[in-house]
Image (cartoon, rainbow, N blue to C red; front, side, top):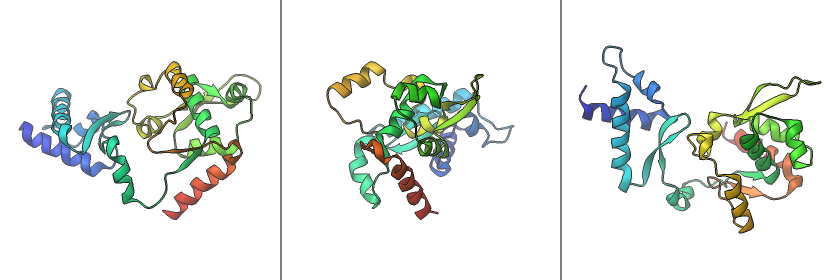
Length: 211
């Protein structure tokens, strides 16, 4: 197949998909007798990335594949297209998610031991429902507690291709010491540790409005 035609097909597929596409998924768009080689698809994806260099959007590789997205520096303007406010997550929820990301696989009890406080059931429910974490097994101890790990959806949401791209704990401590506010994809952090139940309720209410 002509490379230019292959490029147009891949660009169209990426725009239409509404989700990241892996190289393997792109190959499945073609009949077996015309299916392009993996190397050809990667070459085209690299060419598309170059073409986007001076545009307001970019081709990004995340855990689930490749996707077009608006450049982060344009988010203050693009965000005004939507009237709804960014979702708010409590500090307790983000601390729990961070512990799972950095210490996985980990149980709820182990999370509580590190944080020094109980983990609200609403926090675990929210993380599971958003498919940011999943149960990957059960610890062979009395009670057989569930073991949690992050998912590809977690990586996709935070614009990561792999866990290796997470900032190191030393880097996070430096940011904390400098009293910087981390902007997680325009997500606002609610510092009130008592707001966990309201946090989950607010998310459920917003999602219900869109159903």
